[in-house]
Length: 315
Image 1 (cartoon, rainbow, N blue to C red):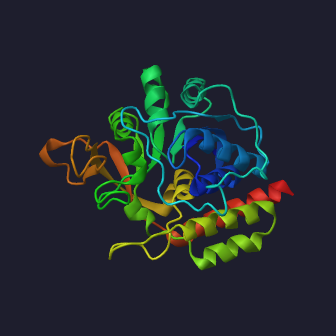
Image 2: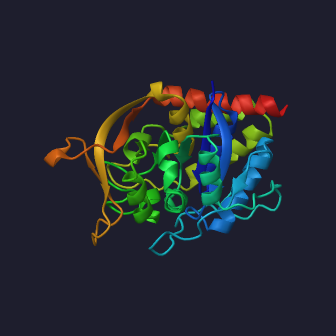
């Protein structure tokens, strides 16, 4: 039986790959896509999602635009972009599906309260979810789990301390992690093991067809913007956002450990850090299941299987 999900994202090339995987994965039923500012401005992220859904052949999936700014802080936009290909530049050559008139937070609330979906996968800032929770606190009782792609138990990837998705709206992350909703966090420490290898690109290319061609363009663009630095950097650009969808559908490919996770909201050098306590010191209560290991080979296989299935559905 497939898992109904809402995908809350900020496309972005890796988010677009996440949409393709969510549409194509045999164990996922994509109920809705909600977007907000993050990788790009909010008006761009919803357009990129609209292009991706149209190309996937699923114009029936509701798509909503959401938060244009974080709850408190100034909006951040990714500093390293590929303006020559994929979805970082404007793409008037790609058709778009229609955008739902509801906001992302309203679409989340209505979908959850109608009991159509009880799982949300997030691959961007958590602003839309925090707003939805503020507007309708009772969704807490209807959500089984949120899969959050973001955070780290070690170093950051935007600052020395902070990971990008959390840093974009730390206050929203604080709200979600303290909401009582079960959360699985997929941090960059674990994601660094699942890279965009030349072999993965070749396997994607071998599928053939417009979905495959688009996915290859997205993968190659991500590789182009990869800026490894320091001795702790991964060898390959991490696959990132599609992994969150795969983890939600296939829990058997990961190892998780419960921990207490708090968001640093005041530090001069550590603002946005996910402070992870696996040892539950001082009688702390665990509030997050953290993915600590991801099977790279099985994740790559699932990625290819989802794109192949989507390509076959399109034929």
